[in-house]
Length: 120
Image (cartoon, rainbow, N blue to C red):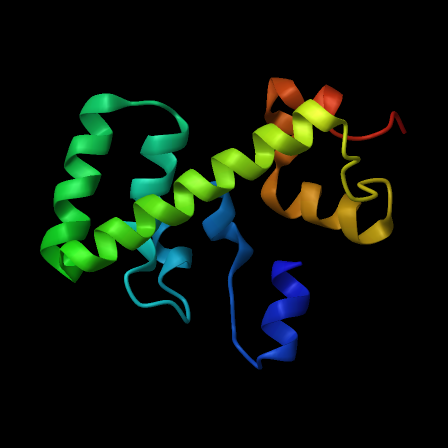
């Protein structure tokens, strides 16, 4: 979806930001690295890192952006939990695009990858 959205809006993106590359996060997105660090520390439930990321984001963007970022992160957590609980299927990760994205981001290195796509 990110690639298609970027093409439609004529934005350059670097999907390596999804794999935690701060330099890639700043491509076409102001505050990308700060937002990425905030989101990652939140998702990883890393309290000390979250405190640093929260402070860094607030200093760089202000309290309004911090609150918005926290709201977006909370909404994504909610949506994922609802999808998991109701059994909503994931996109076809067996498609050629899905395979390419997994390769580009080295997603198969994660232990949970065995549950994310069909055996090939």
